[in-house]
Length: 421
Ligand code: ASP
Ligand code: MG
Image (cartoon, rainbow, N blue to C red; front, side, top):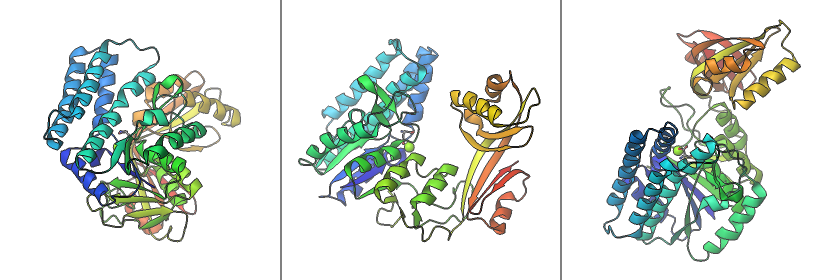
């Protein structure tokens, strides 16, 4: 049994979905779990829909739903000749429910509401993919991941309850395999107690693939992407990127921790725990080898990797009472930031001040000031970038710092991190 994961770009239109079908037909006869993401940019659209509801902007809400509906109906039209197929009414029903959701008063917070709505992208996508595979005559079925992945109720960033999830997945999925070969399901979504829907965090479908693989003792996981594999840098920022043919779990964790966006950071650990190798392959060239991520560390330091995070803000924080930055201050700062769910990319302290680097998108300076302002003086520097180089040398450092000013550097033997202006 293997797990495949297809992200939003691999199901972004009718021909992309057909391509998924043709990749799967290369594996006919094998037992596969096929985890799919929402189609194209659907998750962003659904986020806008939630925002329009919160703002009670009914015109915008209706317009966004129409766009979402047109987008999916267009894909359906492109895939299915027979307009009477139940998939058409299934998708229409979901869209109608979404429409009615506008007047629904939700008990719970924003994040809870977000999860109920945004999770539908994966549901719709997986239903369309499953219907397509059926039409192509592949032996396939569909299963609802909302029933299988059990989480806590930390909406938008739910934590998996592994033992319950394992039980649910094993008891529901294994029997299905006696009837079909491939089972289509959704990434990113699960449920908390009383069946309320949760999501695992943006880009969480990779993680879902790992959860299924772990619980079913899969032989391997393949993430199908629009790139040839894991590259040593983002082609948006670097020329001459190189594909990493083989890296270790440890290296993949390091790279994703620093922000390499190819794989969701939580994906690796469950696979590593069970020694399940992870392949990253191109859905455009499915015959090509891609990248293998597994236990051996043999080839890790052959190629330097570059990870760039743009739009960073460096905060400097100093206790108003001029006390030194020590454990008590730090724990106070962290607990305040943790309540704000702040994510810190880098930190450094001196005697009198503490510096933290965060994504501008997740750390509004005014907000940070208001969280800390009663006890600390906060100032900040915006429009910075953080470059991390794994397996660096002087040449690679010169390459990234050229024409820029370095305002903070942290170095270990394997990794250098440079904040640049
Ligand atoms: N559809 C979700 C997102 O765009 C999950 C995923 O694609 O992995 O974040
Ligand atoms: Mg995605």
